[in-house]
Image (cartoon, rainbow, N blue to C red; front, side, top):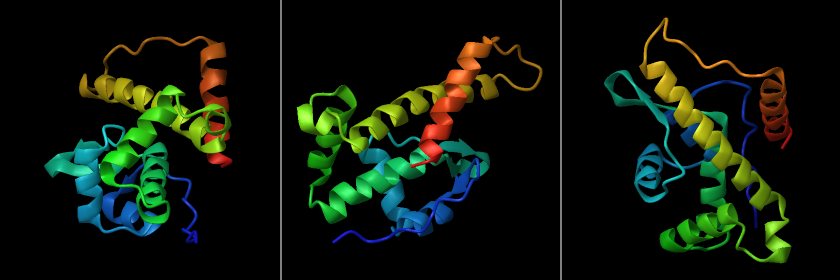
Length: 148
C-alpha cells in the first residue's frame, strides 16, 4: 500500500527539515541514509547545514519506497539502486520509469558535484562556457524531472 507524499515545491534547495516533511521520515534517518547510500550527498554549507536539491529529494523518496513499501533491507536497497543505475536490473525493469529516474538522478548528481567544485572556487572564478545545445539539453533534462 503506497502512501501519498506531499508535492515537492519548485525550489532550488531544501533544508533537512523540509526534506523530512516531504518524504515523511525523521531528520536522523536522512543523516543515516547519507552514510549508507553513496547517491545521497547533500551540499553542506555554514555550520555543516545540509541543503538538498530536487534530485536528492527524489532519491530520498526512492530509498524510502524501497525500504518502507517494498521491504528491502538497507544493503538490498543499496544493491537495487546500483542495479537500476547500471542497467542490470533486467529487461522489464530497466525500461521502467524508476530506472530512468535513477539514471537521470545519477547524471544530475555528477552535475551537482561539478557545480559544488565551481562554487568552492569563489566569486569571480572562471566558469567553463557551454554551447547552446548543451544548455538546451540540460534544460530538457530538468524539465523532464520536474514533470514526474
